[in-house]
Length: 203
Image 1 (cartoon, rainbow, N blue to C red):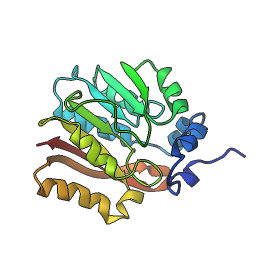
Image 2: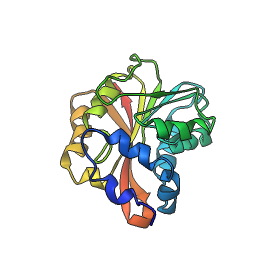
Image 3: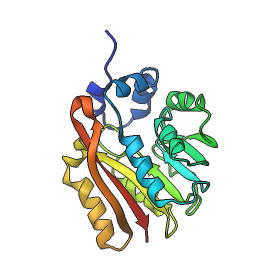
Image 4: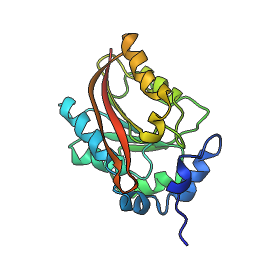
């Protein structure tokens, strides 16, 4: 029987998550595709609605096998860099010839780019249980210059914890960002899992 990684993904926490995604890389696209994964397209559409110059560089953080890169490219984004923990996921992304650069990062090291290097950062299906911790939100936001755009999603598993939605509200209250779009809709429809997609501007 083929291993169903989605059955495990949301309960996978702590160190070694890159090994979990390395193991999943070969079947990831088939499995999420069978479940109707639509969050990348939703995020890319929102970003495209607000980023008029689509030649400006976009960071696809947690790019995985490149499904989010495909969605961004479909919306006309020309210059996309990808970063991920998983070498095997990155190998799959590399075959798509979507990215200007692809870089493996470490979960215990700061992202290797400077504030303002990217006019937009995408963290699509990246922050939540079984994936990146919530503090990655703060790290990525800090790397945007004022006026930079941040598109991300929190799925239902993340939103069960009020800390996720509260993170957005807290940043708005502190004057760190402005939410331009917020849309609750399908994530993995075959599993009846939804997500909230946010498009925010760094202040």
